[in-house]
Image 1: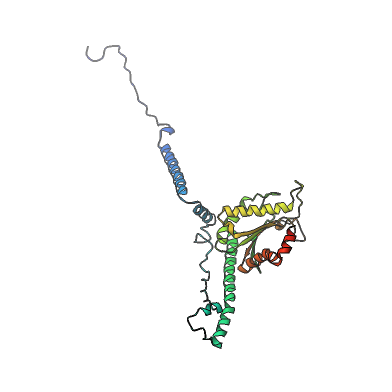
Image 2: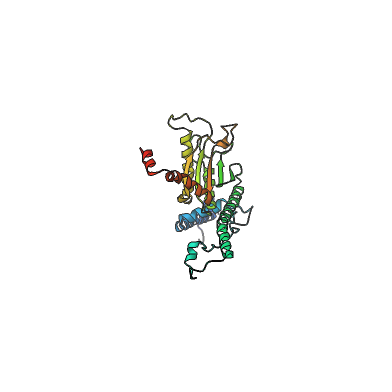
Length: 310
């Protein structure tokens, strides 16, 4: 009998195609590619940071922290291009310089020449004062621009003094510069002081840092009061600015006055009384400050100095 045998069983096998599970699709490849791209970007950023100096990194961080694409088209809100150029130095017209002239010693200057020389001698100090005043005005404008850019009008203000400029950084009811009863600077004011350094670095003037507290007593330690706290807070502000790149040689004095000079005398515990003041000395102010520390030594005779030491 050809073909199949009689009473044989026929088996039919059907292949059912089922869709693969989600884990066997292509979505994981896209996620893995995104992960590798992010990882490569991280390593690129770390490599670039390793190639840049610390000073440049601080400048980049300051630029990024103060940049806003919605407010301006410049990376820096402060422009110092408007500073006046330094005036030319006037020639030496003193009698000592005139004695070395090539003219014969018997030749005497005319009355008109003497008058011109006297006028120029009187004008030279005035020109130097005008130059320093222009520098201070330019710095004041830059500081005011910085305060406006940081929107820190409640915590910073600039005042003009006879000896220079005063930059006041104070607390308000919502923001404290230091942790309560401590000399540890809070993050917001640490960033504010760090951003202030590039502005002050444009000037060659020296600076005094003064710490102030309110009238709240300091009961934790009988040997540590508001006097010690005000000095420690001034020192903390100095360290933050030096760490941000400010030259330590420009700081000529650091002191604390506790609660003796409140801004609000009617409310001694007002937060505005807790502050740090930066006195940016002009050339005349620096000369007066140096005179304060040197006048007593010159006024005492050697005998008086020996008596005073005893």
